[in-house]
Length: 383
Image 1 (tube, helix red, strand yellow):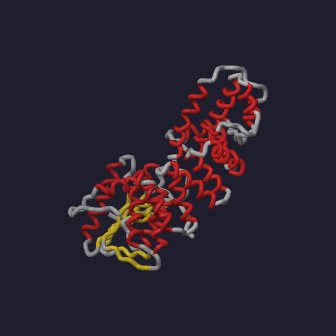
Image 2 (cartoon, helix red, strand yellow):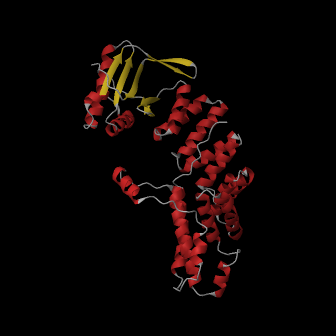
Image 3 (cartoon, helix red, strand yellow):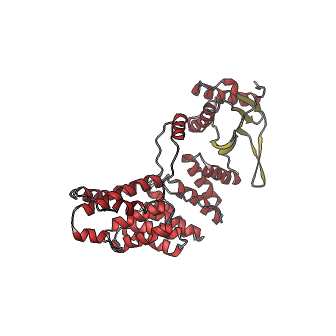
């Protein structure tokens, strides 16, 4: 069976916004001295922290570009741990004996506490410990769609796919537009080879977010398994229109090329393969705007690797001059857009014949095409 694109999505971060009522409850609890041993009990439930030498931190800081990135599971883990510590401590602070007794029993009546602890354990790759907490959260508050969804994820980690499906369905009953429950229910159907049911779920997801990559990619695989080549071709193009980087983009382009469509090609640039939309030209051989973002990938790689040069190879059947004009046009765009790149690092070649491509054991001839090859050894430029 085809491997399914099923990573966690950054939209999970947005789910944390629903915990604001817990924070407000924490703020209303009066101050008091924490009980002895509380910190040890809380911290013992968390995974050990890996230490990094100070010299390595400074070294990474000096060499790493300063960009802001959010990794959903790591961010969720930090938020959950802080919320748990604040919650347990402040509930104890209020001096209410009943509250203290509740914290000392295994039958706490606070569903959010179980929910966040379960998610924290899931994020730290401890699904066997997470499952009881999430089950308790659902038992205490069965009308929360998020609780059912995450319980479903825990069952997936335990390979209990029937109960996983059941929990996603209950989340959708409570909240029909729950995008993650619909998405992961689609994954569940797809894992079982129930293509039509999976397609329905992915269509629901894309009605809310038309560019969600997980749903787009898996729709392509479904049409591939169903043998619907026309629909499959459309889906791969839709996916590559918004996702041209990473291994899933390469695989999508491979599937598209296997169908004889080369509107997106895979080009070896140094140690990696890059997906690039086929350059399109006007009647006067100027570049059209729809392909410029793909060409910018070439400029970006050249700008970040001074030891790399790129060979631009242009084919135009029976027209030597137009092939040369297009090669010069592409080089001119890259040198103007990226002035820090030495023009000598962009080599050009041109041919008045069709490009021959073999894909899926078939041979295709492209009368007009462009091929990019990234190399790290200098060769004499052909001009």
